[in-house]
Length: 344
Ligand SMILES: *Cc1c(COP(=O)(O)O)cnc(C)c1O
Image (tube, rainbow, N blue to C red; front, side, top):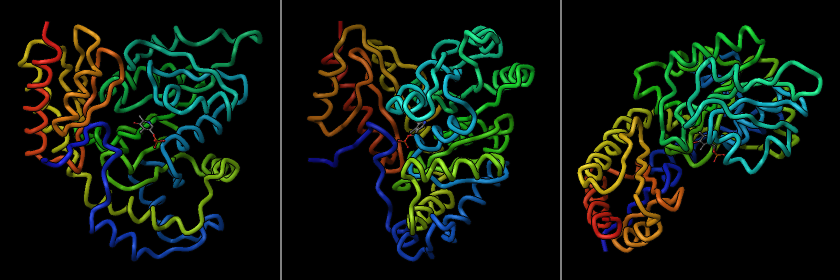
């Protein structure tokens, strides 16, 4: 049996020996006292990379996003998001539960423009929810790793400036957007008050995210982080994995994008399914019938794991533990399986 190729997500990567050594030898202290040197160094480095004043290490991207929501809104407020936004869709209802906010989606398919923000905004009347925050996701996960067009971010920023709305960037996958566009993370984050980034996706660290933004806001976020149980003690062990990932794994993302393109091209050539050409490392395939489960089961028997976002759709994500040979094998197995299970 050849090795299992797990394309369900780029979160499934396991730390390499080099990363494990960096973790084992990290200098640590008590981070609830803010005395962990490795964590503090990572926070500063990431804040710098993102062009922000301060950073805060948190256990997950979910906590990073939700800290931004908590610090930039009040209960009863409304947050504008793109369709299928992670902050709304995949965070267990945290916006409602922890910050008392509701969400309104702008545009369609995850991306939106300046005019869409105006359409989604509620009138400034006491009987309407107060629109108080706009969240942008780059790259957009549920939309298939799509890159948010810079010109649209500029439009949104112009409307937000006029309306006095802060902007938060869910940049869990910002590294992919940066590698694909050639723009630095700071350039991509310029218009935003706060940004969250993940180390546990394409970068291959076991856990951890950073929320970056103005010092005053980050100081308030530290309080919520403790309140929500995210204050950790010798967490430099995790921060060391994240620092190692920044140092060694950023360059690999380009290969992930090549491998996603290679798989997508192979499936597109079948002509029996719809394949959106991937902009980064996520491949979405839509069938003309609800056969996603059958396709996934057949693929699993041949050593390829995929995920099933909808009854007629599968999703494959390339990552650090998938090399070119694996990607080629995934392509030929999926070609065979789809030809058998999903033809008309
Ligand atoms: C993965 C991801 C997150 C955070 O997920 P966690 O599992 O909480 O770390 C947030 N936003 C996007 C766009 C993501 O892809």
